[in-house]
Length: 203
Image 1 (cartoon, rainbow, N blue to C red):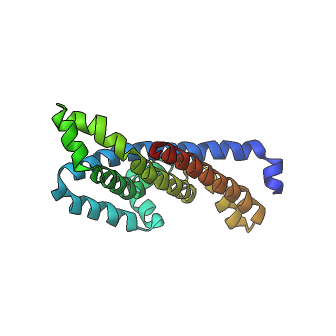
Image 2 (cartoon, helix red, strand yellow):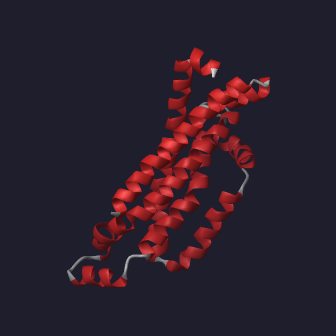
Image 3 (cartoon, one colour):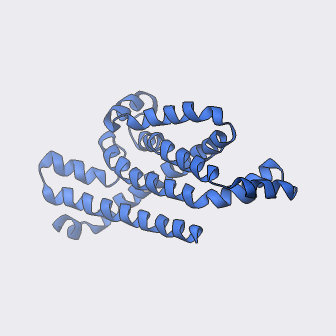
């Protein structure tokens, strides 16, 4: 704990850098995965190929993925963000599809009977009803993103993982602890915040 006490602002700067990586990757993941989930729900023939591709990407070990990405994205935060997107797609696509699939047909028919077009029904009825399940997927992806951003320090992305890797390299348990404790606190905070949002949307 001595490093944390002696260098609080350095740790806070790394924490903010870590949070920025996670937030950027999560925003991009949602922007890609939610439309994919809607597409899968609309064209069920695409369910198997999209779930298969996103599932296979999810199974790639993180260090192997970083090694694959570096020639295209280089060292740094860009690689960390792309990796987070790759690992987040499966859970967000799956939850978006599951949430939309759970909307009762009677509600869809009632919305259509009230004169809503397919697009209006999606935005005004189906997505609001599916939102708690979608947020549940985003929550899982966000917590997972905290861990991915930690490992990404290995490829120069910065963040709190920098302290962990420095501690491992120098066999300094205090440095490892200085990086690990804020990582855990960040993951728990994000999880609690999104869990609260999920419960409020479900109420």
